[in-house]
Structures are given as C-alpha cells and as structure tokens.
Amino acid sequence: MNIILWIQSTDSPFIIPALNILAQNYGKINFLGAVYNTLPPLTPLKIGDVLIPTLNKFDLMSIDYDLIIIGGQGNENFSIFEEAENFKINSYKLVQDRIICMSGFTIERYRKLCHSKLSIFSMNNFGNLIQLSLNFPFVVSNMNFSVTDEEFLKFLHAPQNYINPQIHSQINWYNLLVVMFTENPKILAEFDELPYFKKICFVPFENNFDSGFYIKPYYMNGIPFNDFIRSNSVIKVAESFDIWDILLYGKKTPIKIKSGFDQSVGDNIKPGRYHYESENKKINYYNWSPEQDINVPKQQLGRGLFWLGNFIEDNHISGKEFNFFGTYGDYRFVKLSPIKNKIFFTMEEVFNWPWYDGYQDYCLDYVDLALGFEPFKKDNYIRFPYWLTIYFDTKLDHRAIKNVIKKINVARNKKKYECVNISSHDSMNTRTPIYNGLKDILNIKCAGRWNHNTDELKNEYNDDKMKYINEFMFNICPENVNRFGYVTEKIFDSFAAGSIPIYYGSDNNPEEGIINKNAVLFWNMNGDNEGLIKEIIRLKTNEKYYNKFMKQEKLFTKNAVEYVYTTFEKLAKKLKEMGD
Image (cartoon, rainbow, N blue to C red):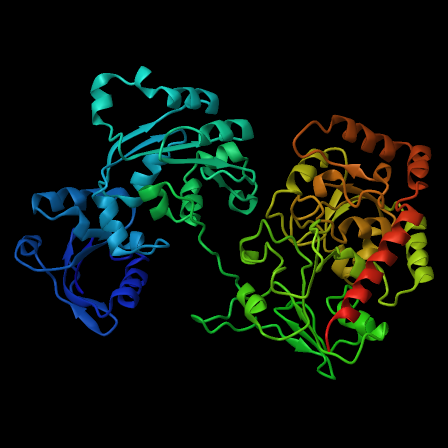
C-alpha cells in the first residue's frame, strides 16, 4: 500500500497506531513521503527505521498513491480538506489518523461513507459532534434541534410541516439518519415505529427495540443522563456500538470490550492469569480473583473465594474433579473449555461493567452449574449471593446457621462516632449523592480510598473493618451498582458490626423476607429524601429512640435460617449429582 503522510501536527498520538492497523489489515506499507502544513522538520521524519522524504504539496498532483493519512489534532484538519480540494484530491483518498484507530475501521467502509451523502436530524447535537469528530465531508446536510423529546417526536411525524422548501431540497431523504434521546420508554416505543430506515435513540434503560441504544451507567461515570447525552462523551458511546454501522445503516452493533485480564491471542483461548488448584488437584479455579492466594490457610481465607472448594471438602462431596470459573479472564475460555464438572460463580454484578462483558448469560449453556445474584429460572442455576460465603461456615449445619444469624441480630455499636463509609471508588455514583446529602447533618469519616479523610482504620484499627464500623452509629454502605437481586456483604457487614445501614441497591428491596426493611435506612436515589434525613436527625439526637430502633430484628431469623440452609442443601445436591 502506497501512503503519503500529510502532517498538521507531528505530535499526534494516532499516527503510529494508525499505521500499525493498516499494516496488519492490508500488508506492507510503502511510504512515498510527507507533506507538512507547517515548516518541515530539519531532518526527515523517521518512522521505525524508515526515513520519510519531504514532499511539496504540488507533488501530490503527479504521484500515484493509495491513501493520504492526515496526522494532526483538533479542528485544524479542516483546512487540509479544503486545500486537498484545490489539488483535486478525492476525499475518499484522505483519512485522518485517529479515524483509522476507531473500532471497526476499514478502507472500504470509510470510502462507502464518504460517498454516502448522509443527512442527519439530531436532537442532541449528534450531527455536529460527528462532523467535528470525523472531519470529512460525507454529511450533505445536518440539522440539530434544541427541543424536548416529545417536541422532536412530533417533528419527526411530519417534518415537511416545519422545514422550508429551500432547506427541504438540500436534505437527502433517501439516506437520512435520525438521532434522539429520551428517558421515557413510551417515547422510545413510538420512535421505534417511525418510518425512518436509519434511526437511533439513546436511553438509560435496557430494551428490546432495534432503535434503542442503551447507555450503561459506567459510561456516564455519575453524570446525569440528560447532561451526558448533550456532551462530547456521547461520541464514545456511539463508538461502543460501532460507529460505521450506525452511520451507514443505522444498525446497533455492540463492540466487545475485552476484559483487562484477557489473555487470549486470536483463536488460542487461554485462561486468565489467576489459576489455582487444590493440593490433590481435584478442585481447580480458573479466571479466578487476583485478590486471594490458594496457599493461605483455610481458616484465614475469611471472605472466601475458596469457600466453594471448602464446601466440597467439608461436606464430603469427594472422589471427583470440580472446576470453578470466575470472571477474571476471557469468557470464551469458560464456554469452550472441554473439561467436565464446570461451575461458574460470580461475586460481582456483570451487567454494568465493561470488563465483565460476555458474562451476562452466566455461561449457562456451557457449564454444569452457575451461581450468582440473578433470579434465573434454570435447572443448572442456583441464586447464590456472595454474602452467603462471607457469614456462614461451609458445613451444612442448621444450628450453626442459626447461631450466626442470632449473633448478627444482637450486635450493637459503641456509638463513639456518628457515621462511616469505607469505599475504594464510586464509579457508578451510588455514594456521592448520599455523602453530599448527609454531610451537613452527620460527621462522616471516609476511611477507604474514595473521599478519604481519615487514616484511623489503618493506623488505629489495623485495617480491621468490622471493628472500626462497630464504633459508628451509622454506616453508609450502598452497593456499587443498583440491580435487583445484587446484594453483597455490605449491608450484612453493617448489621454484624451493630451499625445502622444507610443503604441503596437492589431497587431498595434487598433479600425480601430475610432482611427487615424497618432496620435499614434506604436512600432514594431518584426522589425526595427529606423524610429519611428527618429520621436520621431524630436517631442521632434521641438516644431512647435510637436504642429502640436498634432492638429490632435485623434478619428474620426463621426465614433467614431456612433460606441459607435450603440454598446450601441445593448446592450440595447439585454437586453430588455431577459425574465422576
């Protein structure tokens, strides 16, 4: 492939990656030279071991080349496209380095888009953002509307009533992309019925409509949906759906985001880097968590990712091999591995984090048994929330389970301090609103990495989390992400330490029938918390009322004992039924 570089800025971070992508996809690159929009360097540009000769712009009229790659940053590159027209260079032979680096790029798709003569109607400035991002003249008309979703929908039903004839004639009605956003499922449903071939609607909820592009919470990083969708960040979201399919076909094609622990190369699927096995090599852990060491004595494993292996040993389910799979590696290894007695287990919510992409089906069609938070109704699935492995011993013992629940119910804090939060991050914005809403009425100590304001946990309590929480009247302990059924150890830690949980998660209905909701202070993330704040102030200032609140049963003993015992019994039965 014969390539010329047209350099607007030599410090563009995309030049080398773009050249690597072209070489991988189209073979050897032959550099014909470099044109500079500024003064050329004193010595010729060097890429790898190749010196790139300097060319004059007028040379472009007499050289036979396949592609001119524009290297530069920002909107200055528009001037190159304007100059290129003067030299009668076809736009399909010009491409920015950063465009080549966009997921799904091929020269064929790029040229098809250049020739497409696309028009865009956009409610959220999407058309302008696309033109600024891609910087090439494939859009023949672009209309952006600052209106509500209802008003835009009304316009789309009869655009000819709103557009004057002169503008109407400039629109390519045969290749029109319509883009909007809404938080209203009914509007999405009506939008999906509109007779436009290419239409997309950004929404903050899961849906089954072809036009509904669900923006997952981790993309927004705590920014309200309406603010996020109007910002440049929406381009990154669009790219996650393959920007080429959006612009060419209005098609929703998700781009797989590989796990940071992915170790695969091509079709050579390998397990993640964290792989452990028991001494007798009968129990194996693949794609397991990096936070545990199989060599740690059983009694010290505590919050046990190896609890499942211990459960097998302690309940004498022996004589055969068991293979546990986690989420810290390529999901394809779980699905394609030919080994027997495959058990998938997740301690995390896998629907809203990019590094768990591929695990949303829990590999149910490929494993003998799956364990997790979801309410799936499958013969090879048991709902097995992670808190079960934290608070209960591995032996199937009814009395031991009851004793643990009794101990949790009678736990009381020392009321030395008012409120604590121990968190390492707030990627999904479940902690910041609570902290901001309560910081003026409670003295909140943040002992984790997030919002850190005290070293007491480490310096005075030797990182003993439970001992530290026991000093506080209240514990801010929301889940990392809200999804019904996703209940971790956080609220149980608060109960066990004797501190009142200020909680958000599982649609504020965690473990129905097991957790006494009256013993929890639920933060309303989408509504008024005035009543909750008044309750916290009353608890803080009225000792008699606080003590009465603390006397409530936190876990309904009978229901909790039955649930834990029955769940463990199901697990033992499934494991025993597996083949030798």
